[in-house]
Image (cartoon, rainbow, N blue to C red; front, side, top):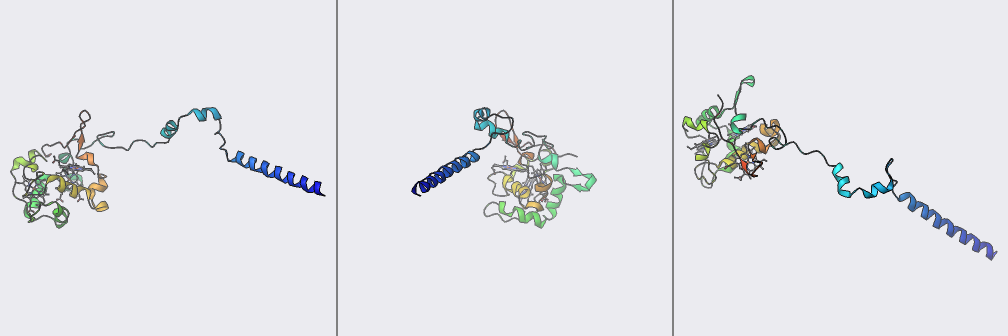
Length: 197
Ligand code: HEC
Ligand code: HEC
Ligand code: HEC
């Protein structure tokens, strides 16, 4: 009777050990088909990660076509097919009469301290439209006290408002439609030029 008990105990112990061994064996990942365990171990981790990387994001002017190489004046044109004139000389005529409330709301945060915007643009010489945005910079300079600085005003206009903003939807809020990278020097530049007739 004692012998039988001891035998059963040993047998169950052996069974437990075996089933445990079988389980650890199952947990070990099987090498993928057509690839021996050896080559899998040799492939460096970085190489394997690289294969899973997505392709580079398409950025106009960086690794994709840029339809607006001259920035402002290439986009603010007269879209005759849509009956929509977005040229600066046309916009300026409106601003000199009365600035749209929607635009005023957007840009008020860009006004320099102490300046209260009137919602009426001062007259600018015709020659200003021959060099945009450089000529605007005469009054809309970075440290201007008399007009909203160009960068702050332009960013608020084009980049805020989400789906309500046509620059965000139609043009995907692309920085590089205005900012152009000089691939040799690493500098960012905003080209300036005459508006199109
Ligand atoms: C790729 C196209 C594109 C480029 C480049 C661009 N804009 Fe615009 N701009 C737009 C769109 C679209 C709007 C209308 C945004 C909205 O829905 O309110 C706009 C609006 C404006 C407005 C407000 C017009 C108004 O009366 O409400 C000003 C001012 C303006 N842009 C100036 C500039 C300046 C200055 C530059 C260059 C530094 C520039 N834009 C470059 C597309 C462009
Ligand atoms: C002679 C100086 C001067 C020049 C040049 C100038 N601006 Fe302005 N701009 C101002 C002043 C001052 C204001 C503030 C007007 C106000 O009180 O609302 C202003 C405001 C604006 C506004 C906000 C709307 C408004 O009238 O308040 C826009 C948009 C604007 N300017 C665009 C331009 C663009 C684009 C150019 C270049 C084509 C330009 N400006 C050139 C002086 C100038
Ligand atoms: C519609 C044209 C336009 C777009 C789009 C635009 N910028 Fe700008 N940005 C400007 C202008 C104009 C300036 C002023 C350049 C100057 O003063 O010489 C400027 C200047 C800047 C500066 C210099 C610091 C400052 O505020 O003066 C930074 C940083 C900048 N932009 C970042 C961005 C980023 C990031 C995006 C995209 C998310 C972007 N911009 C999109 C027109 C634009």
